[in-house]
Image (cartoon, rainbow, N blue to C red; front, top):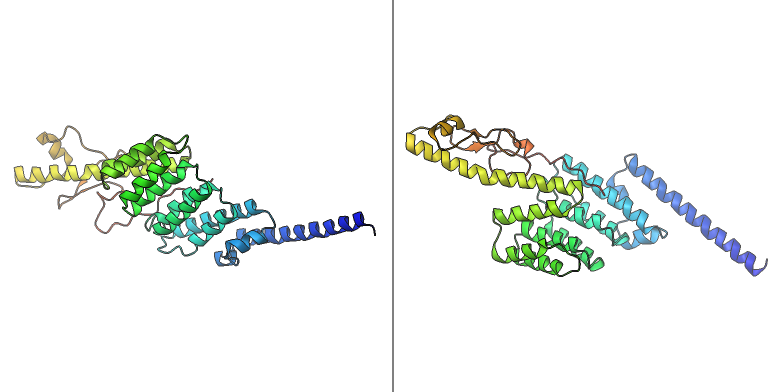
Length: 308
């Protein structure tokens, strides 16, 4: 057998091994789709080992692990889970396989950082994830924006939030909102006006319909959280002026305190409870609200889907 023939035969063997490996991986995917548990998915827990066993198909494997991360989060989210032990490892493997899969950083950090029942409640893990994303995608201002959000909303660390926004604002082609947010973080600590500015920026800068839906829901919640204390102060004033509690907002309209019956962002009228507290008519329609809910109310998980 001449040298060329030996090379050809060797290449054929390598190709067959690669095809066999691909078949093995595809069968693993089918097992996932047919109901295999996530612990089976993580039979390879090392990102380095996953990369070696991907046979060069790092991008394909990253997509598979990202899909599993989304499914894992979605299933736990729907069940109101308090723990998401495998979420961070799934995201670590995903981004190690494809460090430029920015959707994994953007949505993955949201999954990790948000407090239960709407997320995993692991903001420090979210910070690590986004910082890894910035290391591998240093010119993507969206990642600095995500990092600033985590510091501001979940960690209440306004200095680091300001630093993240400031660094992002210095990138080429960045959004002008980041300079404004950096300034606001330096001046104010967690007020509703700043929160509104941040969610407005998220709504206006994103082209993803799920991100926009999430931002819009937060903006509606801020409207409620601002309105309810104002209405409750009106109810309290009415009681002091008349000696009795108003039975509904018609009483306040008739007294001249209000011109119309107030309605929440969904168009439903607010309600006055016997103790003077003001509640929304249907709290489940307004995820993320902190005011206007019945005592002991537990919000259901918002029905947002997360995909590329």
